[in-house]
Length: 124
Image 1 (cartoon, rainbow, N blue to C red):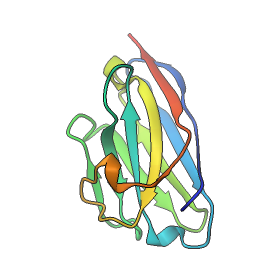
Image 2: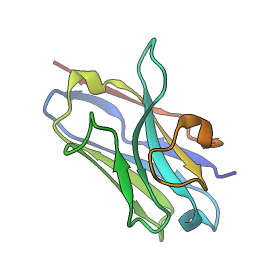
Image 3: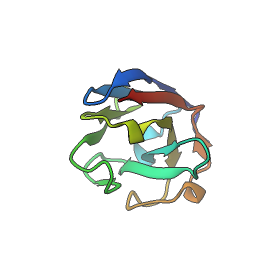
């Protein structure tokens, strides 16, 4: 398993931006697909974005396409989620996750390494 620590959450007004970071432990970071999920109160954890180990391939939920960008720096063992044009419905706890599954629209059940989560709150 990989140890993951998220940072960068906070409170922002609608239309604003935030960048989340997720730092991973270990020497094999580039072999892992990385993903961001989110969970709002009373709702199931949902897929947000994913990126392949090389960083070449990405996938996004329809609700965030064109607004969020996932990227990674394998030299720093870090994955990022740049969130622009934020909406109140983006409010949730955001989790990063690591697995050796395909980057292509994975589900939470595909991941066994999770960060502790970081709260993102978008006010209207």
